[in-house]
Length: 181
Ligand SMILES: Cc1cc2nc3c(=O)[nH]c(=O)nc-3n(C[C@H](O)[C@H](O)[C@H](O)COP(=O)(O)OP(=O)(O)OC[C@H]3O[C@@H](n4cnc5c(N)ncnc54)[C@H](O)[C@@H]3O)c2cc1C
Image (cartoon, rainbow, N blue to C red; front, side, top):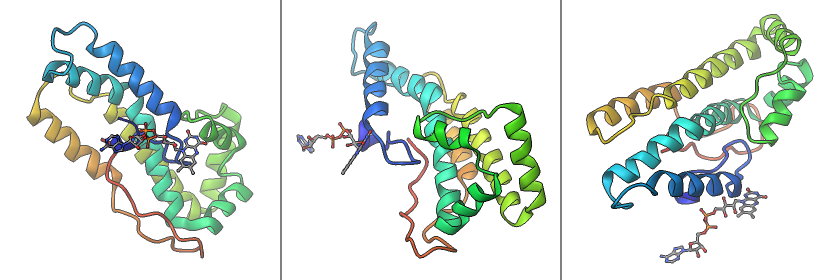
């Protein structure tokens, strides 16, 4: 759990809140089991956490990879152009997946279409993030190694290639992690 389980908010490395949430989910999920450390109990925790919260961490990790790839200058450009909106920035700080108001989303989409060099990869990253979130809600519910293998493979495909360097910034990016376990 916590840092050891990559339960860290990818956009800014905060791990206290999500670690406390994970602890709460664990306590709730194992409470009814005769063996709280057994496979059924720990699987129940894993499924509840990933379905409820893992998708948000994973989606933000997709966006973190995108931001790392375009670098500081690219992110600045996204804010200047209006593709990144104030709602997206605020919700990122508050560690929740953003659904901007319709007018703001429409403006952002128009800006992406008007500047496809930045807009197209951003739209692709947002689509990938949405798909990852949806996939996490389908984490296998109970002990099933084969289903977990298929789910993990699908998740890894959606995360796409690892990012090791920022392409347009002097600020070095952090090495990419694997999918949030
Ligand atoms: C400089 C800095 C600033 C941060 N600021 C923020 C912030 O503002 N907000 C935020 O949300 N997060 C912040 N974080 C991240 C946050 O501190 C971590 O995500 C969080 O503390 C992780 O909690 P944890 O319990 O998983 O791990 P830890 O807090 O690292 O706890 C693990 C504990 O296990 C102990 N341990 C390790 N190995 C063993 C062993 N073999 N036997 C026994 N004990 C062992 C360690 O000594 C440690 O006490 C910051 C991190 C850093 C480094």
